[in-house]
Each structure stands twice: as structure tokens, then as C-alpha cells.
Amino acid sequence: MLPAKDALTICFAHAAYRMQDRFAARATGIRSVEVRDRAALEGAIGGADVLVVSGLWKNDLIPLAPRLRFVQSISAGVDQYGKAEMAAAGIRLASAQGANARAVSEHALALILALSRLLPEARDNQAKCHWRGMIGDLTKREDELGGKTLLIVGLGRIGGRLAQLAKAFDMTVIGIRRDPAGGAGAADEVHGLDQLKALLPRADFVALTCPLTPETEGLIDAEALALMRPDSYLVNVARGRVCVESAVVEAMARGQLAGAALDCTEVEPLSPDSPLWAMPNVLITPHTAGETRRYEDNVLDLLMENLGRLWRGETALRNQVV
Image (cartoon, one colour):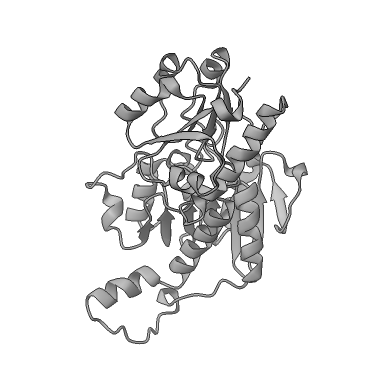
């Protein structure tokens, strides 16, 4: 059970997000503290009943947190949390799934547009004060999205929203989801993950919006990339380990794909000596797909809903993991 509202302490732990500032604006009367690094978190967690955290979490914090009863993850992904260890310690866990669905889907579409409209090349030309002339080779021109096929791997909240946006551009959308019977939504077709290899050759764009699970880790490997057409594009706004990064590097170096847009990599930050940085047909954003000016408030909405459920003695949390 959580302490009463007037006895509760929330610890916000993130290197950059302004969680406490946005929480204070709600005037809840609940005591809160904020830390920015691991050392400060280790010092503060012993007095926290609720922890709002993402990348600073490590499972070895559990013995330091005798009062901790609930962790609200700031991120949708929860692969860093030891579920069994938390359950054994009586700590509940909920993800921030859905808090960034609009942001990540918009970012994915922005990457698709950037690739098709050659915006990275335009920015490079601007830096060189180069006015590019007209192009006679049709294969080297900017392209239109209408009539193109988008394969979305992970037709959940983010993938479903991306499907809606893509349909506004008259794209054909094929979705892959763990349970195809869950519905196609805006997609024209929906299939199970076992159909991925059969569907890859049909796609002009392959967008990864799936969670990182044992089934999706390394999903896009050399074999999968070889099934994609040489005029197709890969867009990853999921997790870096959904792709085998060395295979992506090799595919890009060989010209096996027309291009790739990556918001996440296997190890973050991406190493300065990674070949991906210098590849002209690769667009990299530093895991910022879900980061918007509204993100803190989106997470706080989830936090307050879950606190209300816990105070009422309800067993189910919003986005419950543990």
C-alpha cells in the first residue's frame, strides 16, 4: 500500500527532463525531489515511496529502496527493469506506453518524408552553398509517397498512429503485429510476425515501431535486409537492438538499400567511429523521436492516474508491467 497523499514522497530521476518543474505546476501538495545522476539517485531513493525514472534505473537499486512501492517508467520500453526482482520486493511497475505515440509516429513519418524528398542531401548542399541542378536520372530524384507501400513492424499505438498518417499520404499500409486478430486499424492488411520475410520484398519503406522482446531482438538481420528491395528504405524508431547493426552497415555500404533512417542504435550514444555517421544515405537522429515539449506532462498524466488507482486499492495499473 502507498502512504497517504500527505505522507508520500516522489523521486523524479532523469538526466534532462524537467519532471519536477511540470509536477510543481500541478500544485498537488505531494512532496517530491529530483535527481539528475546515478550518485544522487542512490542517495535519494531510500526516502522515496514512488520513483519516476528511465535510463538511470539499475536493478541493484532495489536493496537501497526499502520504502519504494511503485515505479512509473518515463519510457515506453521497460527492458531495463528486473520484473521478478521488483515483484519479489513488492514494487509495482508501469510503463509510459502511449505517452509518446503521437510524437514517435510523427517522427517516423518525418524520417520517411526526409528520405523520399532527399532532405539530408539538400541540407548538405546548403552547407556547401551548392544549388543543385535538375536531374535527368529518374532514380536519383525526389519521390512522392502516394502509391508507395509502407510495412509497419509493430502495429501497436505508435504503429497504428503511423498507419493513419501514412494513409493521409495515399500510401498502402501493411501492418505486422503479434496478434493479427487484434485489428488492422488504418492498415490495409495485417499479418503475424511469421510473415515478415514474405512481406519485406513488397515494401518501399519498412518502419520498425515494435517493442524490444526476445522475438524482435535482431529481427532485421542480414537475411531480412537481403529480402528488401534495393530501392527501399529502413526506418527504425523502435529500439536499436531490433536491428543487427553490423548487417545494416554492410547493407548500406554495398548499396543494398536506398537508405536508412535510425533514431536508435545498438549502443547509445552511437560511437564516433561508427561508419553510419559518414554514410550519405543514412539519416541519424539521437533517440529523440519521443522527445517533445509535452512529454513530461504526458508521463505525469499516467503517474497521477496510477497513484489514484493505488490509493483506491485497485489491483490493475495503467500500462501495468508488475
